[in-house]
Length: 301
Image: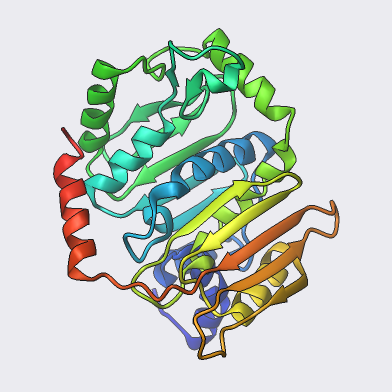
Protein backbone atom coordinates (compact mmCIF):
# COMPACT_ATOMS: atom_id res chain seq x y z
CA UNK A 1 0.00 0.00 0.00
CA UNK A 2 1.19 3.54 -0.82
CA UNK A 3 1.61 6.04 2.00
CA UNK A 4 1.17 9.78 1.48
CA UNK A 5 1.87 12.68 3.86
CA UNK A 6 -1.84 13.50 3.84
CA UNK A 7 -2.59 9.97 5.06
CA UNK A 8 -0.13 10.41 7.93
CA UNK A 9 -1.95 13.57 8.95
CA UNK A 10 -5.29 11.76 8.89
CA UNK A 11 -4.09 9.08 11.31
CA UNK A 12 -1.91 11.28 13.53
CA UNK A 13 -4.39 11.97 16.32
CA UNK A 14 -5.69 8.42 16.57
CA UNK A 15 -2.11 7.11 16.72
CA UNK A 16 -1.47 9.49 19.61
CA UNK A 17 -4.58 8.28 21.44
CA UNK A 18 -4.36 4.54 20.87
CA UNK A 19 -0.79 3.68 19.90
CA UNK A 20 -1.99 1.96 16.70
CA UNK A 21 0.38 1.96 13.76
CA UNK A 22 -0.13 4.12 10.71
CA UNK A 23 -0.01 1.03 8.51
CA UNK A 24 -2.87 -0.70 10.35
CA UNK A 25 -4.97 2.47 10.30
CA UNK A 26 -4.25 2.96 6.61
CA UNK A 27 -5.54 -0.56 5.97
CA UNK A 28 -8.70 0.33 7.90
CA UNK A 29 -9.10 3.48 5.81
CA UNK A 30 -8.79 1.50 2.60
CA UNK A 31 -11.45 -0.89 3.92
CA UNK A 32 -13.83 2.05 4.35
CA UNK A 33 -13.51 2.59 8.10
CA UNK A 34 -13.37 5.99 9.78
CA UNK A 35 -10.01 6.39 11.53
CA UNK A 36 -10.42 10.02 12.50
CA UNK A 37 -12.73 9.16 15.36
CA UNK A 38 -12.93 6.40 17.97
CA UNK A 39 -16.17 4.45 18.38
CA UNK A 40 -17.70 4.77 21.82
CA UNK A 41 -18.47 1.55 23.63
CA UNK A 42 -22.00 0.26 24.09
CA UNK A 43 -23.32 0.28 27.66
CA UNK A 44 -22.35 -3.35 28.41
CA UNK A 45 -19.01 -2.93 26.66
CA UNK A 46 -18.32 0.25 28.62
CA UNK A 47 -19.13 -1.55 31.89
CA UNK A 48 -16.67 -4.32 31.01
CA UNK A 49 -13.91 -2.00 29.81
CA UNK A 50 -14.26 0.31 32.81
CA UNK A 51 -14.23 -2.60 35.24
CA UNK A 52 -11.12 -4.07 33.62
CA UNK A 53 -9.21 -0.80 33.58
CA UNK A 54 -10.10 0.26 37.12
CA UNK A 55 -8.83 -3.10 38.38
CA UNK A 56 -5.60 -3.28 36.37
CA UNK A 57 -4.38 0.33 36.36
CA UNK A 58 -2.91 -0.19 39.86
CA UNK A 59 0.22 -1.75 38.38
CA UNK A 60 2.44 1.14 39.50
CA UNK A 61 5.23 3.05 37.82
CA UNK A 62 7.49 0.36 36.44
CA UNK A 63 7.51 0.88 32.67
CA UNK A 64 6.93 3.44 29.94
CA UNK A 65 3.48 1.98 29.24
CA UNK A 66 0.39 2.91 31.31
CA UNK A 67 -0.95 -0.25 33.02
CA UNK A 68 1.42 -2.22 30.77
CA UNK A 69 -0.62 -1.26 27.67
CA UNK A 70 1.34 -0.80 24.45
CA UNK A 71 -1.69 0.02 22.34
CA UNK A 72 -5.46 -0.36 22.12
CA UNK A 73 -7.56 -1.10 19.06
CA UNK A 74 -11.15 0.10 19.51
CA UNK A 75 -12.62 -1.74 16.55
CA UNK A 76 -16.33 -1.31 17.31
CA UNK A 77 -18.86 -0.48 19.99
CA UNK A 78 -18.68 -4.07 21.26
CA UNK A 79 -15.03 -4.99 20.86
CA UNK A 80 -11.70 -3.71 22.10
CA UNK A 81 -8.28 -5.27 21.62
CA UNK A 82 -5.47 -4.42 24.04
CA UNK A 83 -1.83 -5.20 23.32
CA UNK A 84 0.06 -5.70 26.56
CA UNK A 85 3.75 -5.47 27.28
CA UNK A 86 5.40 -8.86 26.73
CA UNK A 87 6.52 -9.26 30.34
CA UNK A 88 5.32 -12.03 32.70
CA UNK A 89 4.81 -9.62 35.62
CA UNK A 90 2.31 -7.61 33.53
CA UNK A 91 0.26 -10.70 32.65
CA UNK A 92 0.38 -11.87 36.26
CA UNK A 93 -0.85 -8.48 37.45
CA UNK A 94 -3.76 -8.45 34.99
CA UNK A 95 -4.85 -12.02 35.77
CA UNK A 96 -4.39 -11.57 39.52
CA UNK A 97 -6.51 -8.41 39.63
CA UNK A 98 -9.22 -9.55 37.19
CA UNK A 99 -10.01 -13.20 37.96
CA UNK A 100 -13.07 -13.20 40.26
CA UNK A 101 -12.64 -15.04 43.53
CA UNK A 102 -14.77 -15.71 46.60
CA UNK A 103 -13.42 -14.45 49.92
CA UNK A 104 -14.88 -17.21 52.08
CA UNK A 105 -13.85 -15.63 55.39
CA UNK A 106 -15.41 -12.25 54.60
CA UNK A 107 -19.00 -11.47 55.53
CA UNK A 108 -21.18 -8.45 54.92
CA UNK A 109 -21.82 -6.78 51.58
CA UNK A 110 -21.56 -9.00 48.45
CA UNK A 111 -19.00 -6.69 46.82
CA UNK A 112 -16.72 -7.20 49.83
CA UNK A 113 -16.95 -10.97 49.46
CA UNK A 114 -15.74 -10.93 45.84
CA UNK A 115 -12.25 -10.12 44.60
CA UNK A 116 -11.43 -9.37 40.99
CA UNK A 117 -14.14 -8.48 38.47
CA UNK A 118 -17.50 -10.19 39.17
CA UNK A 119 -18.76 -12.33 36.30
CA UNK A 120 -15.53 -12.19 34.30
CA UNK A 121 -14.71 -15.28 32.24
CA UNK A 122 -12.06 -15.92 29.61
CA UNK A 123 -11.35 -17.96 26.49
CA UNK A 124 -7.84 -18.93 25.50
CA UNK A 125 -6.93 -18.65 21.83
CA UNK A 126 -3.62 -19.18 20.06
CA UNK A 127 -2.86 -15.44 20.02
CA UNK A 128 -5.28 -13.81 22.42
CA UNK A 129 -7.13 -14.11 25.69
CA UNK A 130 -10.74 -13.04 25.29
CA UNK A 131 -12.39 -11.57 28.39
CA UNK A 132 -16.18 -11.57 28.57
CA UNK A 133 -19.19 -11.97 30.85
CA UNK A 134 -21.75 -14.74 30.20
CA UNK A 135 -24.91 -13.35 28.65
CA UNK A 136 -23.34 -9.99 27.81
CA UNK A 137 -22.58 -8.78 24.30
CA UNK A 138 -19.16 -7.38 25.14
CA UNK A 139 -15.59 -8.60 24.98
CA UNK A 140 -12.01 -7.42 25.40
CA UNK A 141 -9.13 -9.26 23.70
CA UNK A 142 -5.66 -9.27 25.26
CA UNK A 143 -2.76 -9.82 22.86
CA UNK A 144 1.00 -9.38 22.62
CA UNK A 145 2.14 -12.25 24.87
CA UNK A 146 2.24 -16.03 25.03
CA UNK A 147 -1.29 -17.05 26.02
CA UNK A 148 0.13 -20.05 27.89
CA UNK A 149 1.38 -17.54 30.46
CA UNK A 150 -2.22 -16.61 31.29
CA UNK A 151 -3.23 -20.28 31.47
CA UNK A 152 -0.38 -21.12 33.82
CA UNK A 153 -0.94 -18.10 36.06
CA UNK A 154 -4.68 -18.80 36.22
CA UNK A 155 -4.08 -22.47 37.10
CA UNK A 156 -1.74 -21.44 39.93
CA UNK A 157 -4.38 -19.06 41.27
CA UNK A 158 -7.10 -21.72 41.08
CA UNK A 159 -4.97 -24.15 43.08
CA UNK A 160 -4.69 -21.71 45.98
CA UNK A 161 -7.86 -19.59 45.97
CA UNK A 162 -11.58 -19.93 45.32
CA UNK A 163 -11.43 -18.65 41.73
CA UNK A 164 -14.84 -18.44 40.02
CA UNK A 165 -13.66 -17.91 36.43
CA UNK A 166 -14.13 -21.61 35.59
CA UNK A 167 -17.88 -21.44 36.31
CA UNK A 168 -19.98 -21.54 33.14
CA UNK A 169 -22.30 -18.77 34.35
CA UNK A 170 -22.43 -16.04 36.93
CA UNK A 171 -22.58 -17.28 40.51
CA UNK A 172 -25.29 -15.80 42.75
CA UNK A 173 -22.65 -13.95 44.75
CA UNK A 174 -21.18 -12.38 41.61
CA UNK A 175 -24.64 -11.27 40.47
CA UNK A 176 -25.31 -9.67 43.84
CA UNK A 177 -21.94 -7.92 43.87
CA UNK A 178 -22.38 -6.60 40.32
CA UNK A 179 -25.94 -5.40 40.99
CA UNK A 180 -24.80 -3.63 44.14
CA UNK A 181 -21.92 -1.89 42.37
CA UNK A 182 -24.26 -0.65 39.61
CA UNK A 183 -26.29 1.29 42.18
CA UNK A 184 -23.41 3.56 43.10
CA UNK A 185 -21.33 5.71 40.74
CA UNK A 186 -21.82 3.31 37.80
CA UNK A 187 -22.10 6.22 35.35
CA UNK A 188 -18.94 7.81 36.73
CA UNK A 189 -17.04 4.51 36.62
CA UNK A 190 -18.07 4.13 32.99
CA UNK A 191 -15.96 7.21 32.17
CA UNK A 192 -12.98 4.88 32.44
CA UNK A 193 -14.04 3.22 29.17
CA UNK A 194 -13.46 6.22 26.87
CA UNK A 195 -10.26 6.86 28.80
CA UNK A 196 -9.06 3.30 28.16
CA UNK A 197 -9.87 3.65 24.46
CA UNK A 198 -7.51 6.65 24.41
CA UNK A 199 -5.05 5.54 27.09
CA UNK A 200 -1.86 6.32 25.14
CA UNK A 201 -2.77 10.01 25.30
CA UNK A 202 -1.92 9.94 29.03
CA UNK A 203 1.68 8.77 28.45
CA UNK A 204 4.38 11.42 28.55
CA UNK A 205 7.77 11.34 26.80
CA UNK A 206 9.66 10.01 29.82
CA UNK A 207 10.88 6.51 30.69
CA UNK A 208 8.15 5.77 33.24
CA UNK A 209 4.43 6.31 32.64
CA UNK A 210 1.83 5.09 35.10
CA UNK A 211 -1.82 6.06 34.78
CA UNK A 212 -4.08 5.28 37.73
CA UNK A 213 -7.83 5.89 37.98
CA UNK A 214 -10.60 5.42 40.50
CA UNK A 215 -14.09 6.74 41.21
CA UNK A 216 -14.34 9.40 43.86
CA UNK A 217 -17.85 10.39 44.85
CA UNK A 218 -19.31 12.09 41.80
CA UNK A 219 -16.22 12.08 39.60
CA UNK A 220 -13.50 10.01 38.04
CA UNK A 221 -10.01 10.59 39.45
CA UNK A 222 -7.10 10.12 37.04
CA UNK A 223 -3.46 10.36 38.06
CA UNK A 224 -0.28 10.08 35.99
CA UNK A 225 3.26 9.87 37.31
CA UNK A 226 4.73 11.69 34.30
CA UNK A 227 2.00 12.55 31.83
CA UNK A 228 2.14 14.70 28.70
CA UNK A 229 2.16 18.48 28.65
CA UNK A 230 -1.12 19.87 29.96
CA UNK A 231 -1.94 21.90 26.85
CA UNK A 232 -1.61 18.74 24.73
CA UNK A 233 -3.85 16.71 27.05
CA UNK A 234 -6.49 19.46 27.26
CA UNK A 235 -6.63 19.76 23.48
CA UNK A 236 -6.87 16.00 22.93
CA UNK A 237 -9.49 15.40 25.64
CA UNK A 238 -11.60 18.30 24.39
CA UNK A 239 -11.44 17.38 20.72
CA UNK A 240 -11.75 13.59 21.03
CA UNK A 241 -13.95 13.27 24.15
CA UNK A 242 -15.70 16.60 24.43
CA UNK A 243 -14.38 16.96 28.00
CA UNK A 244 -14.10 20.67 28.79
CA UNK A 245 -11.49 22.17 31.06
CA UNK A 246 -13.21 23.91 33.98
CA UNK A 247 -10.23 24.97 36.04
CA UNK A 248 -6.73 23.85 36.87
CA UNK A 249 -3.15 24.62 37.73
CA UNK A 250 -0.32 23.79 35.33
CA UNK A 251 3.35 23.69 36.22
CA UNK A 252 4.67 22.28 32.95
CA UNK A 253 6.70 25.40 32.21
CA UNK A 254 7.92 25.80 35.75
CA UNK A 255 11.39 24.75 36.89
CA UNK A 256 9.79 23.45 40.10
CA UNK A 257 8.67 19.83 40.30
CA UNK A 258 5.18 20.63 41.52
CA UNK A 259 2.51 18.54 39.87
CA UNK A 260 -0.32 19.75 37.63
CA UNK A 261 -4.01 19.53 38.51
CA UNK A 262 -6.80 19.87 35.94
CA UNK A 263 -10.55 19.55 36.34
CA UNK A 264 -12.63 18.54 33.31
CA UNK A 265 -16.40 18.37 32.94
CA UNK A 266 -18.64 16.38 30.61
CA UNK A 267 -21.09 19.06 29.41
CA UNK A 268 -23.93 16.66 28.64
CA UNK A 269 -23.97 15.02 32.07
CA UNK A 270 -22.17 17.38 34.42
CA UNK A 271 -19.77 14.59 35.41
CA UNK A 272 -16.28 15.64 36.46
CA UNK A 273 -12.86 14.18 35.74
CA UNK A 274 -10.19 15.29 38.20
CA UNK A 275 -6.74 14.84 36.65
CA UNK A 276 -3.34 15.10 38.32
CA UNK A 277 0.09 14.83 36.73
CA UNK A 278 2.61 14.23 39.52
CA UNK A 279 5.61 15.07 37.29
CA UNK A 280 7.93 12.82 39.27
CA UNK A 281 10.53 12.52 36.52
CA UNK A 282 11.20 8.84 37.26
CA UNK A 283 13.52 6.76 35.12
CA UNK A 284 14.12 3.08 34.43
CA UNK A 285 17.14 2.99 36.74
CA UNK A 286 19.00 -0.24 37.64
CA UNK A 287 17.04 -0.64 40.87
CA UNK A 288 13.72 -0.47 39.01
CA UNK A 289 14.94 -2.86 36.32
CA UNK A 290 16.05 -5.31 39.03
CA UNK A 291 12.58 -5.09 40.60
CA UNK A 292 10.95 -5.90 37.26
CA UNK A 293 13.29 -8.88 36.80
CA UNK A 294 12.33 -10.13 40.25
CA UNK A 295 8.62 -9.77 39.51
CA UNK A 296 9.06 -11.66 36.23
CA UNK A 297 10.82 -14.51 38.05
CA UNK A 298 7.94 -14.74 40.54
CA UNK A 299 5.12 -14.49 38.00
CA UNK A 300 4.70 -18.28 37.60
CA UNK A 301 5.51 -19.28 41.17
